[in-house]
Image 1 (spheres, one colour):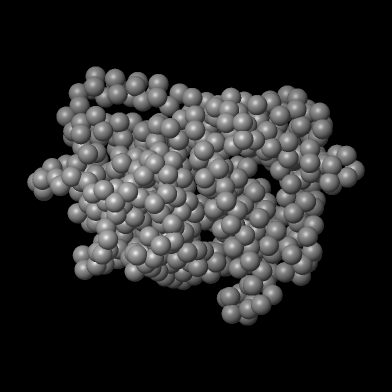
Image 2 (image 1 turned 120 degrees about the horizontal axis):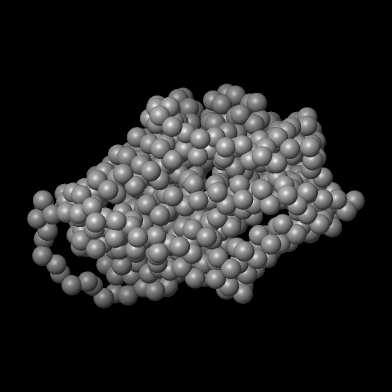
Length: 549
């Protein structure tokens, strides 16, 4: 048994600086030096292992096993999702169905800003609620690039849009995990998060379009942006407060899509923006696209069928009943011998010493990526592919994403090494020592956790206990601060290296992760700070109104 040490140098300042080395190496290599992502990830992993072993005293064998465990988790479920989403996109693109899909979306609106709003925010929220774990970014970025958006716009804007729904993603998995590790009531946590994120469900659509075209062009279409945001925020609040965390995103996304599509039947912008530019922040060109012949209804239905099939399979694979039945057929839970129950978390990160498990869940049947693969196969057969054609397309897809899969494996290896060595807890403790400003910095702990691990669920598991312990010591509401960990974490989703690689892969812009990171970094920090200020207000200014059960 090895117990974690959070201040190995006897100085929190020095320990924090050393703990930050893997993060600095990884983000610096990608964002500043513009080193290719898989090489930057390998450098970050080497740094994480060196810090864990030589600075924090983690046994080398344990550190190596933590890295291997993380790499395996990176491939299943995350890499498995990306591979199969790109496979589906390749099938539709090669048959020309994506071009028809692009033209059919213009029937809702030929304005690029409204297409972005509908796909990245509304549709992306549905995939976040049903599957999570990179699915919404992979799908929406691929759709936007197919619609003619630049790779930077498709990547960066998909990441910005995938924020407000994240806390309730994958049928509420982050909130369920948060309740499990904190011992707090699930419905109380769901309700509290549902009193924080709806504000940002209104803000994010405006922020998304502003990041794309600037303030003046955003104001031109403020009515549909408001409709999309409010029609998402209201169900998000109602379902999270009066039902629970499970169906929040799915209900809110469906309501938002219907509301926006209905509103656009009676309202269209006076100056439609029908073209895009290479820079998301640049003023769009005024040149209109050529007039195209109307598409026959059967062709439109055929083009949309693969994505409808995908939605059905993703939703089914996201339901607990289907997952349980598939796991009942076959699932392998593999303990990582030498790491499982060999690492102990200690106070003040947790209230009492806690032994960390390390069991790899090889749930290939119930994994979301398997549902996506089956959807792709069904769609491929529907589109006229032979069995050999499907195999050939899959081989081409696997070759296309080979470096992305390596990168994601290394990214998750870094996250698991920092988790089991305790270096990420050191960074969290540094932010926890902020006194009355803790509601702000506690929110940023959640942001940091997602930026490091790539998952709101993982961040909640990592820092949920710390949030409760620190809140109780400072006389703050523990439900508030545990919820703030999840709500703040959603804004870190756009800068975690895993999500950036997913976006670059979906847009075939691999190798430009540094450009994507630089584009989204300000938006991530600014939105996380706004969440923190809201939590400060909940803690000190209007606690009785927003904290009342």
